[in-house]
Image 1: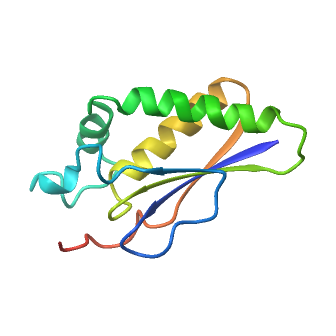
Image 2 (image 1 turned 180 degrees about the vertical axis):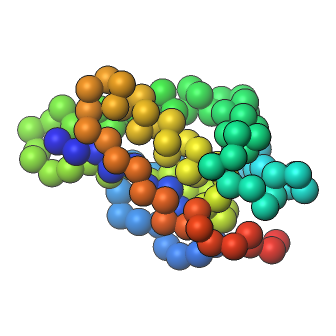
Length: 125
């Protein structure tokens, strides 16, 4: 059973179809508001540190990995899809998607990560 973790930005297109969808926009600090981080992405260590240092985010990552594993343990042969979305898809969502996939992989699952909008330019808002 494969688990696909997709990151995306709500401002670019509709969310992908998924068994679990995380909306990170309202509850978790947005690195976009920091001029120093705005033009960086989840590929940059300062963005990763800012996102993963946000209160509550590691609990959400752990809970999401557990929920995805529960879906994967079910009797269906269908792959499991987890989607993590933020405003632009460059900071919070890809950082969280990678962390969820890493937890799943370390637990013995086959987990892949796709970043739908990480490559897109910064959204001016």
